[in-house]
Length: 369
Ligand SMILES: [Zn+2]
Ligand SMILES: [Zn+2]
Ligand SMILES: [Zn+2]
Ligand SMILES: [Zn+2]
Ligand SMILES: [Zn+2]
Ligand SMILES: [Zn+2]
Ligand SMILES: [Zn+2]
Ligand SMILES: [Zn+2]
Image 1 (cartoon, protein in one colour):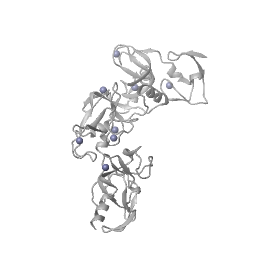
Image 2 (spheres, rainbow, N blue to C red):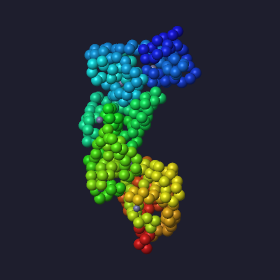
Image 3 (cartoon, rainbow, N blue to C red):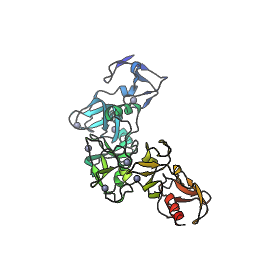
Image 4 (cartoon, rainbow, N blue to C red):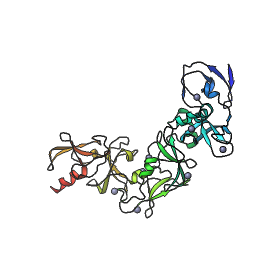
């Protein structure tokens, strides 16, 4: 049985079952039942999905006809999901888009729409100082294989990252400006400070938010040296940009005889691609001592630091230890100075007492001896 679908230029063949795993070009789910398929190009559709017409209209839902469109990245106006689709339905008069699954739901059973709406995602757009345009609240769909290819083609990247924390946004509630490809976690947006007062990377000047879009020149972060997309914290005196997460990075300045300037201890979220001056290794999860001004970087274990010693403030010997978090509380403290501690950086540690201290706290007391 052959079948011509409006979205594909070859005839499709009907099969009851498959050996291979195909993704449905309509709903993007994996197929394991009866389906239509074009074996040449690995194109396949569920039987029910292939039955969708090229144009739909349900006045109770939207007053205009919605026509199919191939390959698009949208925020669905029914379920508020943000995804890349092979087939969407688009209003022929106004800005109104449905992803394929919602179109199927509207045709078959309108209650299905409510079921897809697993979280309260009623249309919300809001202005935010991180971007010059209105941002739309959406849920970012997990990436299907087809979706990933579409993002690669249209966005030059299949990794969708938050402008604030640089982490992926898949599966999260986020805000988006679609034309600018600007994405930010809802939580990062809510937590964003209006200014950064004393960033360890730039302690003497206040950093202010700087949105930019369609920027001609590439903006790089002074702290991690990586590209900044769409939004930074900026020093207007020194013309220096910072990722939000880098500007707020929690670390301390330490003095060490190996370098004339203060060194910042940096962890894995910042030092990717930075190589150690002493051993030359680039790819490791160790923390690093860094002078950003001189681009001088060394591992704690590559400079003369005592690996273990007795300390007057603690009964047992303290050992230089790789970065670790003692639990998942997200609140970590130095037992010597009792201020916060970044779990990404090296510490001095006594396993017997679970006593953990900043390197510079331990060293400064040693020097006083
Ligand atoms: Zn399907
Ligand atoms: Zn939808
Ligand atoms: Zn319309
Ligand atoms: Zn984020
Ligand atoms: Zn925009
Ligand atoms: Zn950075
Ligand atoms: Zn400055
Ligand atoms: Zn230096």
